[in-house]
Image 1: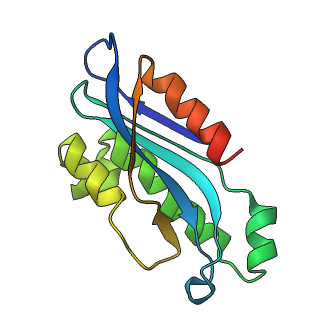
Image 2: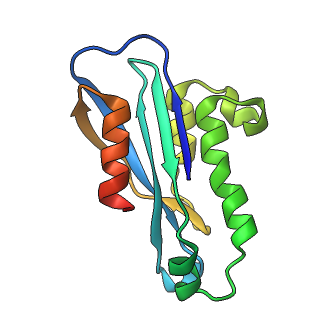
Image 3: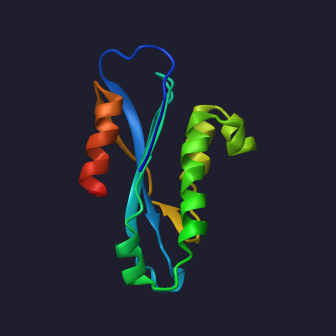
Length: 137
């Protein structure tokens, strides 16, 4: 399980955030997927975080030939980019909004995200955790 949080200032009050569900689509042509994580961003407070867990049994039920190592490596990029880690490449060096937009861009690949959704929260890390539990389990 990967958990990543990047915080700048102390957060108080209601925060408008955006989030997206991270999905694995092992055979894109079939459009079957499993939810594996959540990414949440509130650039006004300087918060971006992701949490990922790959249920290998579910994935292999959809595609027994799925490349688990490749998928896990690609999923780890969410953490590196959210942290702004040098291991996240040039995308990790972008501002928070640009990182979130890049991570949630529409693509036709094995790793995809839902369209971004919005919400309000007084506790962004707790909201990330709640969304993860609700959407990924």
